[in-house]
Amino acid sequence: MREISLDRLRTLVAVAEHGSFADAARALHLAPPTVSLHIAELEERIGAPLLSRKRGNVGPTSIGEVLVERARRLLADAEQALDDIQRQVGGLEGRARLGASTGVIAHVLPRALEVLREHHPAINILIVVLTSQETLSRLVDGTLDVGLVALSQPPVAGLVIKPWRRDPVRAFVPAHWRCPARVTPEWLADQPLILNDATTHLSRLTAEWFASGGHHPAPRIQLNYNDAIKSLVAAGYGAALLPHEATTPLPDRGIVMRPLRPALWRRLGIAHRAGYVERSTQHVLDVLWDLRLA
Image (tube, rainbow, N blue to C red):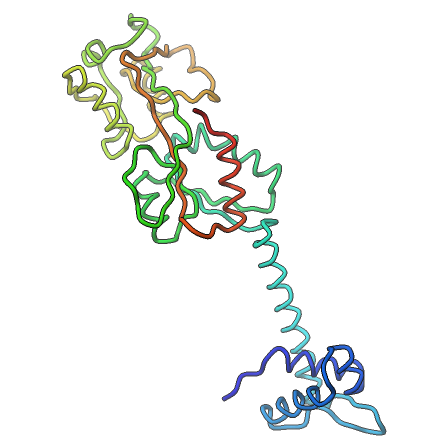
């Protein structure tokens, strides 16, 4: 069974509105025989007359009136759909799905979201809490558009991973402890520790830092939520190694923050699929890139 095309429906509506095949042809920039052919094809498809011709005036039959009304709604919906898509193609609205860790979402991403809300308010940012490996996997399978991931990462086919920023890792120590001006693996390994969950990149990074001094301490607890870790540090439960982003406030009075010796950095990258990038996604990438730190 042949489908009814929007062009044929548009012709029917034009004839009904103008009351003339010739006037409809001029309005649609079609030849009169083409208009007649469109109506004939529709009537053949429907199996009933759609237009009546009386005294030089053309008008819809009762069946034609039903189809004309439905056709107007279909054509309006089609135009609206195309307009919506064009707005997305032009970057005026749309969505971008972003994956990142809890720490990045809490302390790095808010400024980017503020800028996006100010300059691109019609772009809907959907945020998902994921590890770096989960983020890369979902970028590959197309269920994410942008990822903020820990570096370094091996190359992934079909993805672009660019260095974005680096933040110093600091020792967060209960304020009532006596600690050196610069914290070393030797000193910290002897303290009660609150460390990141072993599945995180930061856990591997800090394990390597301890191992550089020949230490492999066992933490009192492992978490994957930096604010919860800081709360435990402030309560005196233990010390932690966490990134300190320049835009975040200093810890509360229950915590002192010390640099490390040797220094340690948490490096982040921006990841997205290679090739064509939708304009809404590109806006997100541009804003994030403008907020990069060396």
